[in-house]
Image (cartoon, rainbow, N blue to C red; front, side, top):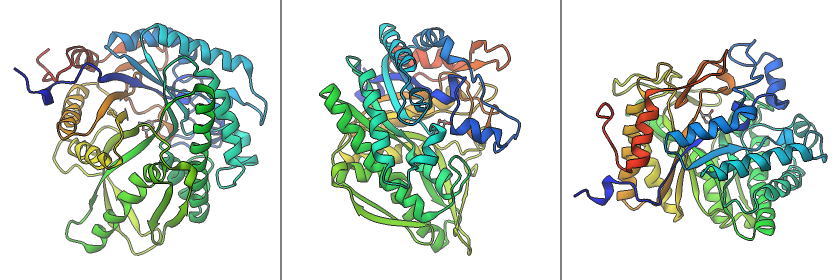
Length: 430
Ligand code: FCB
């Protein structure tokens, strides 16, 4: 007889995750501009047709079904829907509606992200996140999105990884909009919290009820030098600021960030209080923090502490941090969804083991009473990986980037076995 912790209950959802820009192809937005400005790691790389999911979506739904998925995470591309400020493209809205209906008809529950890093280019010129007008702008877009979701019982994510967008786009200036300013970062953060609350009102008005959350990138943190008081102090500051500030604001209506010398804020946003039904967690790795005696005083590294080998993108394979992260979100008293977890594994040989070791942590968290309700693997397909371009391969399915042919990796069998048997099987025993 198996103990309950060894199995996933029947209501637990296994699914896959994608985002519009990374898979659809043919999108003109702030990232396309960024690429043309030569700002990717490989300056000539372009997302372009991506992996043509826009035309191959039915084939891709079938691939998801074939691995036992019953949920499919997509994002809506704002630049398709509102290509010019205030002008909504009815054909694009219709196309998304059709895709969502087909997804549902395939037996896949839609998980729909309204905002996954990208913006129409006009947004940064007209109403960037650091200006208060960004909130009504997002609200108007969210109203159109709400209409697409009618009758679908979708899980809705307002923002994907807002802290990654803000850190990369507003503090470091490495991704669009390419600003590097701590004070503007905090204003943008505040407006994104307000925009979430505004979007929620639109969703509620249209749908009556909604299951809404954000997808938060959550890192395990460790001091680079375990004995160094300043490295340890950084860890104590980083986790509340990076992992929890956004979640906290949506639970309590109080936004607090305290990263001395980097960025700090403290503001009440009452409309954001109790504004999520679930906690979305994207978990990949652990970061080692080191104090450096010059701004921004913090250095961030991945290290191979257990000799497992870094993943191909260079991240530490640290399943232990997943359990720690899930324990940490128990405080919000909400159901938890793993909205992303996955590995860049260019040969496909490590992924079954990665899945096994990470899903074991999900079961451990459930056994400790963390109400994890679903797991969405990042990603169904190899795709365009932002600044890294076409190097990384996170897909359950390998994609030949020339022919766009999708081919199963060994993790497909593994994922299907776990998703259908609802228990952890050891990789290699299938
Ligand atoms: C996450 C992003 C997702 C993908 C994975 C690898 O930070 O949300 O779009 O790039 O990392």
